[in-house]
Image (tube, rainbow, N blue to C red):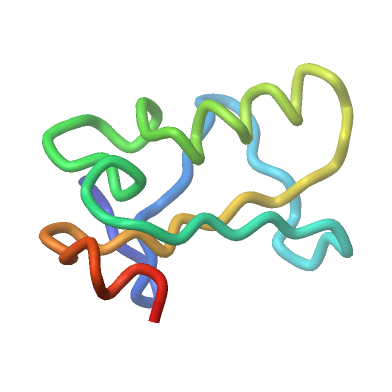
Length: 76
């Protein structure tokens, strides 16, 4: 599990788009977004990054998930 600049790392082996990409997708949520207990490449944002890459959509996906976040804090 890796964290960079306060965000969980979104990894697709062998490819990650340039972070200066104009097309950014941000994921927010609790443990199921963060990917608690799984490798970086198996989080939901990483799967979305893989789909973007395979379809040449050009998105750079960010994981802002927080492990242990309470349900009532998500919508605030």
